[in-house]
Length: 381
Image (cartoon, rainbow, N blue to C red; front, side, top):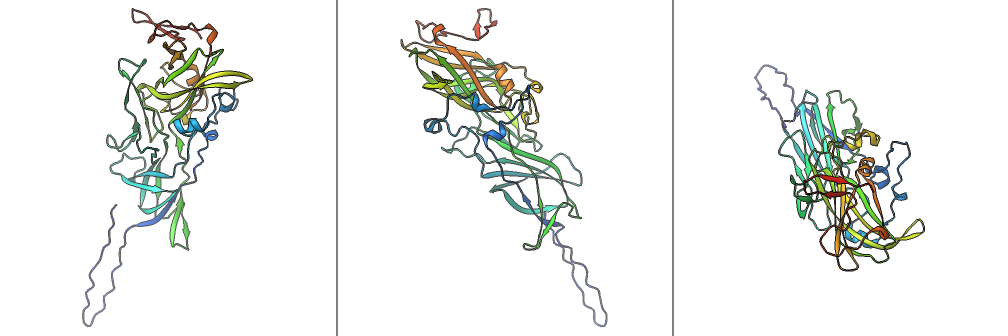
C-alpha cells in the first residue's frame, strides 16, 4: 500500500512575505469494513426448493441419527460458525472489474477489520480460516496460479478408487467446510458515497453487506439394512462417493470440471428406528466441492443442474461367516436432486442378499457389473 507524504520547503525572505504552500497528505480515507454476523445453521444452507416446490426437510429422511460417538468419530453433523478469516484485497484503480495486478493479504479474527483504502475500485475476497481438531487439513488453497482466481482442492488418498479410473486410480480426501464471499468494484470515491462519519472514533465507516456462503456441501449417506438379523456384522469403516468435483473456485463459487471419487468414513449402527421398524444402518457424513461445473448457490432447482457424471457409493461389508463383499449403488438421481448437499439413502432387504462363499469379491453389486469386454451394465434397484 503506498503512503505518500509530500513536504515543501518554506523560504523566508527579509522584507517580503510568502504564502505557505499546501500540505498534501496521503490521499486516502480510513474506513472500517464491517462484515455481518454469519449464521451457519445447517437448516439455513440446506433450505432450498426442490422441483416440486416443497421445502427440503433433511431430518425427515435421516434415520441414522448423530450421537456423541458419531461426533467423536466424524465431528459435528452440520456446519460450524467460523471465527477467523482470510481476507484478500485487490486494488484496480479507476477501472472497475479490471484484472488483478497485486493483492493485499490479511488475517482477521472476528467479523470486523479496519484499514486504509486508496481512492478508486477494490475487489474483496474472504474465506474462513480452516481449523481442525488435530491441526491437519486436507484443503489446499492455490493463490499463486492466478491473482484473479483462488482455487481450493484436495489430494489423493492411498485408497483405490473404484470409479473415475484410470485417470485417477485413487480416491481423494474430502475437504473441510469452506465458506467464501467475493465482491467486485467496491468504489471508494472522493465524495465518500456510502460512508457514514463516526464522530466518536473520528473515522468514516462503510458496512459491506457480504454474506459468506458454503462452497463445500455436506452429504449424509445411509444404507438401511432391513431384516439383517446379524447377516452383516461389521464394515471396514470406509466408503466412497464418485463423480464429484475435485476443486472449487473461491471467487465464483463454481466447482471444477475434474470428476473424482471422494473418500469418507462410515459406521454400522444397529437397532435404529425407521418408522417403527428396527433396522441396522450404515451411516456416514462427507463434505464435497459439489457437482462438476455447477455453482450450487446460484441454482434454484434440481432441473437447473448440469451433470454429465454418474455417482456411486460403495461400502465393504463383512458377513457373519467372515466373508466380505463390496456393495456398489447408483445414487446419481439423489446427488443431482440434492445439489447443495442432503441425505442419500439406499435400502436393502437382506432376505434377498445371498451370503458370499468367498472373501474379497463382490457378493452383491446393486448397480454395476463389469464385463470382460470392459462394458458396464446397470441394474435397477
